[in-house]
Image (cartoon, rainbow, N blue to C red; front, side, top):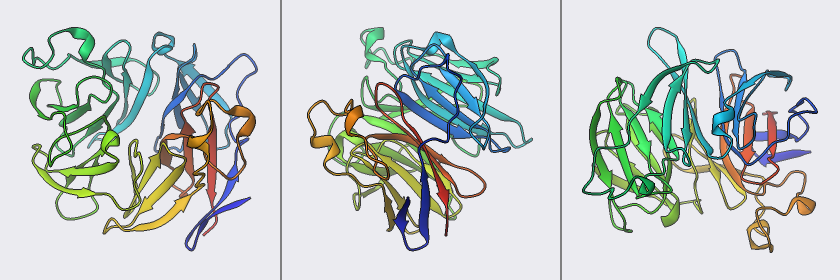
Length: 305
């Protein structure tokens, strides 16, 4: 089945992931791709971090400690070419940087903001992104609605956001991305609870909103001059360099209105999404989408045009 429009047409492949019979997926929350086009999937199961090759063959797994709270996943490419993963667990309240085979090289402490966090339970990070200078941005999507910035060594720098719907205020800052499509890098935040994207300077100053085409944006992935956005309300949106919508993929507006959603497994439809939570794009332009559903769902969209 072909989905998409115009220059964004894809073959829908829902049988791409070839997992061993011993692995049962949980909620599939995060996905990234490395330079070799290996795909890393973060899910809430005993095999929390799965690695598959481009053909969907199982390579390895690790991270059983993240089984309950596996959520955000980010791949950072260093100036020297090295690649690292950031794994975010909202139950453990942990943000860790690891090698591609799971060796921890950095753990970020919770933000030292006792004026905000009167108890440890209020901190529930959901995502991370990294700026060109190495600064790390942590998004507290399920705790207090702030973005916390650290330097490349894990030293806390500042926080911004806070509850509300005004400029600079957030409601479930679920994920973010450092956008480098133009001359000046900017921070894009998936302000999911406010049904919008909010754009900040890298030091946390509000710049503008993006609402066109947005329902409940979860996070972002930049590929060439485009920004791909998984929308929890059953579609994927693609923005061009000017943040105009150029494609919407797998749109299924009835799914979120169905009783029991997102766990409506008998009603999943080929060519239509249910609850996109994260995505990535490989070097060929193929898109990998993982969805928020209790038994997991991984779809590969193979670029046709």
